[in-house]
Image (cartoon, rainbow, N blue to C red; front, side, top):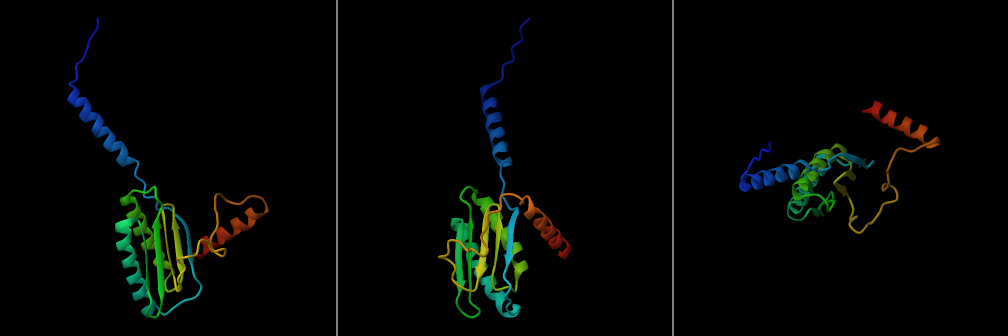
Length: 167
């Protein structure tokens, strides 16, 4: 005995398109996990510095919406320069989510006159000088692929434990 069920082709195509839309939306990942937050040691008066910080972040936000990266600066005292960029594999929505997350977390460093945050999908930095032509900063830039091993592991574990106690 052989049964055959006929399904109209139109329903098959609608189901296929619907499934593809659900699948592609489920893979979206704004990559907002924090990889690093570095706050400068030098502080400024919050009442003077924070308004300039806000202006720079607003200008950068406009560029981020248009092109996925942006920079801005305020040259009236106190001087502040800012830069943000998403990695090229992020969608526009994921890029904006990543920037919003970095913009929310970076003010933890205020009133420091310099700070940078690295998320999995973007970065954001501000400082009191024009760093736009710097490719690397040997004092802050690093590669962190995994936890250290051997003798360094004890110092690393102790350091990470101390940081968690201080929070």
